[in-house]
Amino acid sequence: MHRFQIVVVLSLLAFSLAACSDGSAERQEHAVEGPMLQVLGTLQDGGAPHIGCKRPCCRNLFLRPATDRKVVCLGVTDTNSEGERVGALFEATPDFSAQLQEFQSKWEVPLERLSVFLTHAHIGHYSGLMFLGREALGAENVNVWAMPRLRDFLTTNGPWSQLVALGNIRLNALTELQPVSIGKSVRVVPVRVPHRDEYSETVGFRIEGPSNAALFVPDINKWDVWELALEDELAKVDYAFLDATFYDAEEVGYRDMAEIPHPFIVETLDRLKDLPLSEKAKVHFIHLNHTNPCLDITSQAYRSVVASGYHVARYGQSFPM
Image (tube, rainbow, N blue to C red; front, side, top):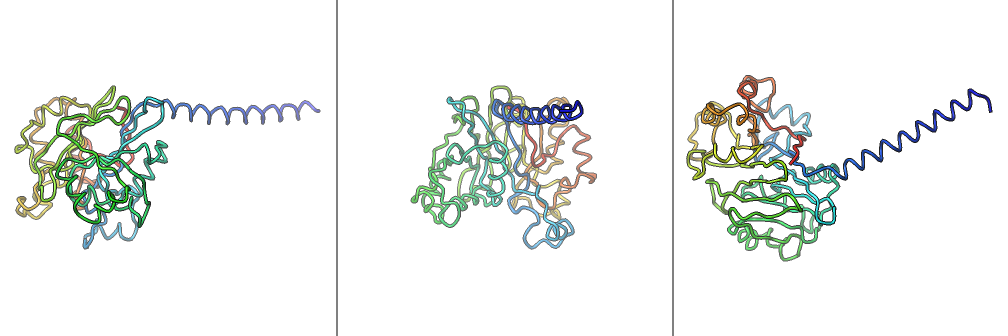
């Protein structure tokens, strides 16, 4: 064999070994990666484009749907005592199918090792459970965690009661401030928040990992009617995903907020304005209405939020826990 041929063969062999080695290392790194939190959705219940919306913000999305416009949802991964990857989705949204696919493809969590935590009974937060039923996935005993009123609502009202009766889901009881383990190192603590509780109570979640903790409050009436102080809750965590449904009163035409109570982003900014930048940087605004100007990263509203030291949550972001 000529010297040139030998060089070519050795080069190809080295390239092949490197490719195999790189893939193996990548898989090994993925296997040992610690608990993570992933943003799987950032929008208010109605999503975007929003039904009946004729504004440019929706018209363009009807023509060209955006894959990153999903209803509010977080995913969290951990490992169990056997070293297997486990996980949880926070909310079962109308975009549940795509969000589950995204989460499972990234973290390789099978359905039997997945839990779903629900905050309350408004459509963007629990209606995705329908995809676990016999008309769709026909799942078996997916663990769903809910507070007492919400559990009762799901058990006694169809079509949700059919999911329970057929064993598509297994309802588990949440108790305020009582932690639930996802795996061996991540705990979930439900925290009651005031909201429109027509069919269930409403909670946020404090998600506690071995290195970091996150607060998830996608829906609340106003910060000043919460029995807890937002500033105190911020101090307990490293990330805070907070209700940012509307930017200000102008966005909603100065309508009576008693009908749709949420803290405006500008109200949250004002409340936290005296905090150090290190605390402000924990805040990631989430649950944005389709009209919220902060969905547009070129808007003055978005720039103002970021310039003040805060963040607007983005689909696909991952955070170590």
